[in-house]
Length: 182
Image (cartoon, rainbow, N blue to C red; front, side):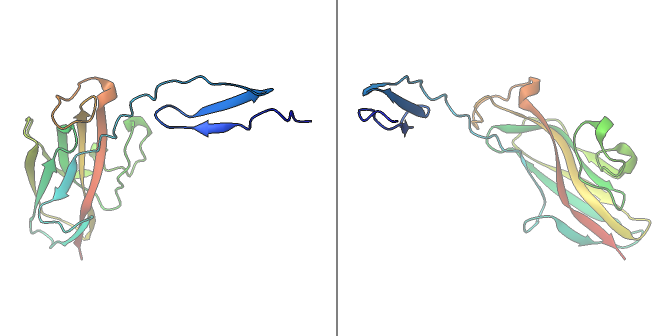
């Protein structure tokens, strides 16, 4: 049977972590803790085919004729690209990422599936461009991807210097589109 003098439980989250105020026979007690500062999510850099209208692009290729690609690499919200490559992969390759030992054999991140690559020059500029020409020798749909690594500032601010430890260094893969050759 409930005590008629007890006060119901309440939850409060104003300026503190959520509290449960429990009561016993009419006496209320509460403990508070300051809310830890929430760290903003550091976004990955922006990687796009130059002139792309949004999303992966489908480019028409011709057997034996070079398709010229230009890729814009832009740092975003405290992230900085430290290395990377534009990759044209074998038809059927996938954008899987992670530990190389655990990747499927179709992953474009595996060198065996990369037909053409162009490596981003090292630098501190927040906006860079990388170019690649690829002349397909067989019909198919050739995935275009950017495979890289970036670092973030501790608080994801655009003005800080990126940290160089493992917790602030991320590998990433960005599918940019395909070159389709009939």
